[in-house]
Length: 263
Image (cartoon, rainbow, N blue to C red; front, side):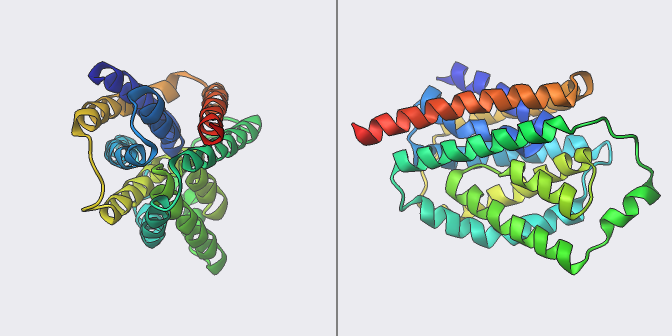
């Protein structure tokens, strides 16, 4: 089990560091179908693994000046209350229904990634004065970020994932961030939301440290290598390959859940 946890942790960490929050969506299926945890335990383990790995990955991106800390903190803080609501809802849903809903979320994420990859083009380096308009907060932008923060917070508590595939588009569309900035800042948001959702489960959740510790350490190591991958592999290629993998995981998760529900 430890070997499997390390191998999966490296894969998750690599995708997390390369793709931002979107990479964390594989953590719950990996914990359920490879490690053998039940759905609720997997969502709890995922929050710890993804939260710690996101902090480390964010610090790695911060060295290149891509993280917008103020925006990340505001976005993350907005979703904390919704994270408590998502955690409460998690306890009321049948595990197989939870996994079936999670499969639907994976498909949405994959389709969104494929759609975005069609229009991806390498962005020219931006000067500080060109980035300045993205720093202005207007009522419309605040509303978009606040709404997205609530959605992401609920998803974090309910599914045990960071919702990076929602955060990144919100940051690029609402605040005009470049893709590298949005990916880096999304890691800050995920760290905060994961911490809030874990706090909501304090005293009631069971932590399988024999799985969580090696998985987390491997994910941290993988996340540090994720930025190297993005420097060497075209973003479009990386995004499309990962989207195809997500669809395959969603099909397997949905099929297994349906068989269990109908059986």
